[in-house]
Length: 465
Image (cartoon, rainbow, N blue to C red; front, side):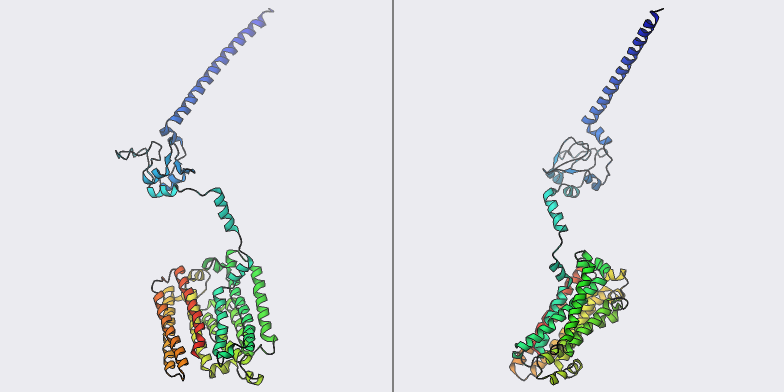
């Protein structure tokens, strides 16, 4: 009896050992089978491709799985060989991993392989940039431009240059003689007019950008506020400071704060404000918007600074200066009337041509410009024809006046200026021939060419006297 537990224990141990042996044998067999399967998967590319992540049959999906290495060699899922980039471009590669297509026989199994196009593969095999160059490009994109450069872009330089050229040209036109322009009094009066004028220009263009941020993100995404280079709060501070200094200068000096300067600055301030700022926002109404721009670019700037030049620089006394009001100059001085009319019409062209490349954003934000109402083509061709007519009529009139001039010098100056107007009209028409009015980029380039003609017109203005 005492030996029975030992015997039973021995039998139990034998059974456990047999069971353990059988389990170990089974595990060994499973392991062998699993390793065999893995070996088959590794050595057979056809099977490995079947178990690889599914690829789209399109070339785009195929290329997205390609891995381009630094040696310009590419490897596809399931392939056991590497193919050079030249082979990828100049020959067809079998994406299924079965090998390169035999160009001599031209036979391939279409059911088991897909061929990527040469164009798609050439895009995939382009050598990637190094990590260092990528980081450098990212740093350049993230780098913010300096504040003076941002402020310069914020001023809308093409309009600022126009104002900077207009004032000395108007002074020269108003001067009794060319020599009288080069005096200390004249230069001081000119500088005193130029500084607040440029600040007012900054206020008007800056206010327009502040109120049109969302529109500019569509029409002019490179402007400082729309691009994020300038904070809106900073822009507001800049335009307010420019406005305050400009208006103070218009009234603080008893000699140079003339009525003409006050009309030019305060008139520009009022019309520029109601043009952009809610609730007026006259830019939403095409006729009122055109009136604002024509009034500023035509009568207010030309007649205002002409009156200021006569009063501050070329008058013999205060009593004489008081007689050179803006209205008096417009009605009694043909030079003032001519410049106001010419640049008033030119202002219409610039104002309406400016809206042609902005049609998309204006439609979205319900800005009912003439371009939105009647179409880009009609506005573009109408403004182009208007400017050609302006140059043609002005050129013909100047050449006619040249024949009636009292001296040879006046005849030569007016004749050359008239000929320049005719050439400018020809250039305006010629440059418009290849412009697609519905292409914003082309129209904008043409629009900037018109600004160059605007500058040249002011440079030539003193020659008509």
